[in-house]
Image 1 (cartoon, rainbow, N blue to C red):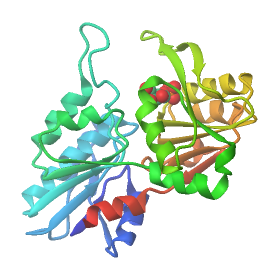
Image 2: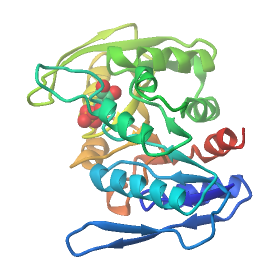
Image 3: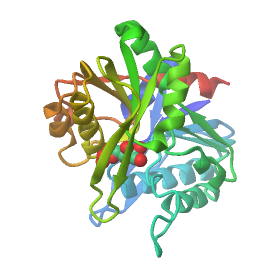
Length: 299
Ligand code: R5P
């Protein structure tokens, strides 16, 4: 097996390769003056099973294009099989038509990857499991929840905790984490999102949180507003402390500043997305999913 890292996932590729006792390889990425890319594999891959690891976070269009061209160059160079490991699958949140006239980006992406010659695809914590059904090739849906569960068992007294989903869509996720932690209590925020402004309106809490340490659990932190608003709501509802756990640190715009200034004690995220130095902040702690990824690739 040969493991190749795309330019969005270099350090994660190194970590995964290390768990697999393999050497990570990287493709040549040449950028033309008009920003088109030329991708080239230098080493021999004839009859090899190849994995390309590339997250499709910011800038998603560029990272996707690099992924598509990487798959193509490995196939054309005679690889026996090519699998894609896309730790964060960009464009997945538009998974159905919210308003008349919209495109369904998750389905468009699935359609392109299906036709790219991939044998199968791996990804972490999809926004909804129904995205799996949009693909014809096999999708291995992995989760960062076991990593979060280990961290919570190590750092917290389980009897003090309540898990909180910042929206109804996160209920399945929070129930799963609660089970991993021995069925600890959970609560949900009932929120409405204004589809024009993206702002969250009228957050209300369903569940008992008073006096507890609240752990907010979400799949994605993009602008940071959902998590920050939820932490304020929880403090106003009488929790003693509030922490956040999220798989994908998209960190768009002023997210880092918003999270640092929020009432959150700490923000735990995974390394499905590489966070540049200028987006890191004192309350942030990064937990690695590389071992789970390597185990999945081994089997
Ligand atoms: C929404 O359904 C997702 O699960 C996240 O809650 C959302 O993407 C977070 O977005 P933001 O950080 O911009 O509030």
